Image (cartoon, rainbow, N blue to C red; front, side, top):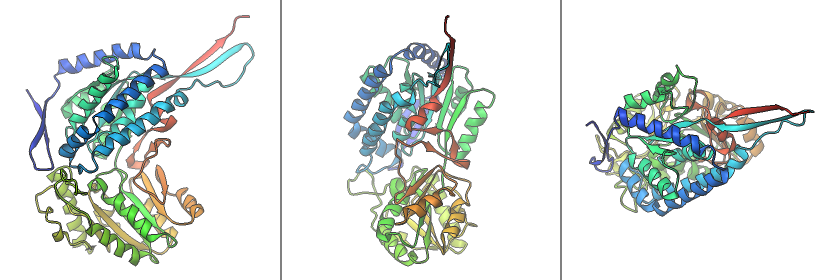
Length: 462
């Protein structure tokens, strides 16, 4: 029997083993989902909401246990990991309450002798492929709205965080969700792709890398189903001359290094107006030197390992290459004892004297590294922010909101932030442009991607 193994980045041990689903098990799961959805779609929004709220209650009840599991599976410090379950519940409850608006019947207006309206019909079986970096939050984005919309869900979680999928199943069972409406599969890459091609799947929601996003899109290409792709980023921050520098440093450096920089909307490149450059750099280096890199199971650790040694070596390789091309590394990594060649522990780093010929400024890093460039004007900053194949978020720090909005209109991105970064508001759609993906989740607009419009055009009896 082929097994899936989760290697903990904390100490390199095998933390979880799971057998891959067999073809017969996959087929039975899909059949069960189709049958369950046929009944579930007829339940009221109020009934669905009651169950999903109970799911949230169960998730909260297990938050500390789940946090410890996340710590060991992907390395987030235990001082931070349980908060993901709590944040996930906040997001889920918002989407539950937003369902009435997102699924509301639309009346186009009166027409004599006719009754006309548009309903939002569920798509059927939604196949969610979730990532390891924010294993609860990213899963909530698709799973809870899909179920609230009347779909059945099959969740294939990252092999790095399989216990999160099982916790979702446990919490939905505790909430009383009918069997088959939510199911979990542990799949090989080949079977994961084959499932996309299966005629019983009606929508795919994938969060992950650009390379895998292309594979998902190719797997679905021969079928007329919708595919949501939330992919990578190389998100910029721009600090204007009039910004509160201390505030900007506190937020942007946290936005670059939180979760060891493993966030699709984390800050990976910074453009600083020349008037604030020196002060920002001085404060940023001091903040970076204050991080405590080490064993994430310790309460005093605030920077854990990256997900695996392959990722760690990729990050170190980007930095070494940039330095060989003329960049200057401002943080003395020798002060971080855990950062050793071959380990998963990577110290925070700030690079200056960089440019867009370097991979570290153009290619997603997904680590606690940020490159910084000095600019002379908004126009220069704008050109550099748009010089990327990605477009998830962009952050502007300034006291002039009007100037920020004018810049935002010209930035090629899904979300424009003012005086914040690396954040998500479930009232707003989460959307990327260019290689950051297609489709959108969250907000009432997120329900559009999980339903189809069904028109009623009724000639009334005379």
